[in-house]
Amino acid sequence: MDWQTSEDTVPSAPVTEADARMLLGRPPATGAWRDGDPVGDRRFGSFGAFRTESGAELPAYRLAYETWGELSPARDNAVLILHALTGDSHVRGPAGPGHPTAGWWDDLVGPGAPIDTDRWFVVAPNMLGGCQGSTGPASIAPDGYEWASRFPYLTIRDQVAAQLRLADALGIDRWEGVIGGSMGGMHALEWAVGYPDRVARAGILSAPPVNTADQIALNSVQLEAIRIDPRFAGGEFYDAADGPHRGLALARRMALLNYRSPTELNARFSRSWQSGVSPLGRGGRFAVESYLDFHGNKFTRRFDANSYLTLVEAMNSHDVGRDRGGVEDALARVTATTLVLGIDSDRLFPIDGQHRIARGIRTTLDGDEAIVLASDFGHDGFLIETPRVGAHVRRLLES
Image (tube, rainbow, N blue to C red; front, side, top):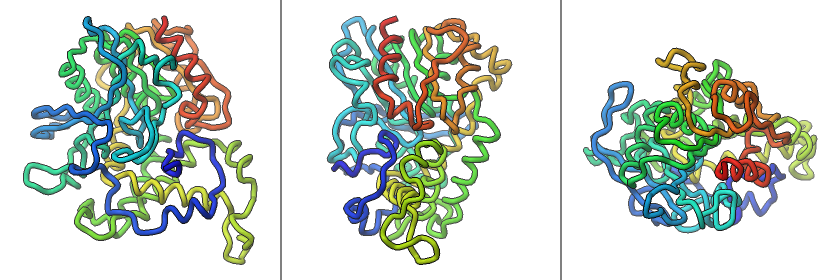
C-alpha cells in the first residue's frame, strides 16, 4: 500500500504509469471513514452537547484518537499531537485496514524517537469536523441522515474546546507537551493561549498567529472549486453514485502549490514531459501537471468535500488575538516553554508569522526569533525534514 503514503510527507516525484493504474476506477462519493469501516488503531471518545462559538449546537459529538506509550500513574507524561488540515490521528503505523495512509510523523514518534513513547504517553485526535472518525459533515445526525450542509461552522477555538473534553475524559489535567504543525500549530497555539495552566510545553511549527487576507484569499478559490462542481449539490451528495471529485481534486491541486516551493517543483520536474507525447500542441502533458492531477485524484479517495470546506473555514477563523486585545496581548498569556519553528521557503505561512509568535511569547526556547530551517520543500518541510524537526522537538521535550 505504498501508493497511499501521503504526498505531504515525501518529496515531489514524477508519476509513473503504475501509479496512474492504481487510481483507475471511480472513487466513492466521499472518502470519509464511516461507521462500519475497519476501526484500525482508532479509539473513540464520545461527548454530550457542544455549543459552538457561533451559537450552533451539536447534540453530541465523537473524537477519534490514537495513543502510543503508557500513561504514568501520576498522569504527568502526556503529549498531545495535533495534525494539519488533511491529516488525521494516524501519526504512527502502516497504511492498512481503516488507515488509508501510513503514519504522517512515523520518524518522530516511537520508542527512542524524538517523541519517545518509552517515556511519553502520546495522544493524537482527529479534529472535530474531520472525516477520519471524528464527528464531521459525513457523520450521521440524530435524524439518521448525514449532517452534510447542516454541519455547523467551526472555529479553531471550537476544535480546541472539543479536544479539552477529551483531555478531561482521559484524566489529563496538564499536557507535558502540545505539538502541532500548520493547522495543528494553530491548535497548539490556541491551547497555550487559552489554557495556559494546562500546557507545560508547546511546539508551534509552520503556523501563523492569524490567518491573513492573502491566506484567506488562497483558501477562497479552493472552496469555490468544490462548490461549483455540479456533483457537490449544495453539500447533499452522500447518496449519489458520484461525488464532487473534480472540485475536491482541483482544490487539492491548488493547495499543493501552496505547500511546496518553486525551487522544489522546478528542480524535480523542470519542463519535462509526462510521456513521449509533446505537450506543445500535440496533446501531451508536462510532468508537473500529471503530478498535481495524480495527487488531487488520490486525495478524493481519503477525504470528504464537506469536511474540506468545514476545516478550511475553521483555518480562516484563526486569529489568536481575537477578543483578547490583539495578537501581542494574547501571546503574553502563554506560560509554556515554547518552540516556534518555521521553514524559510514556506509560501503558505511565511516565516514572519513565526517570528511574530516568538517575539510575543516570553517563555520561548530561543528568544525573540523562531527557529528557521532552510529547506526546498516549502510549507511541507515540517513533515519532510524529520531529522532536523525531530532534533528541535526532542530539545523541547527535554527542556
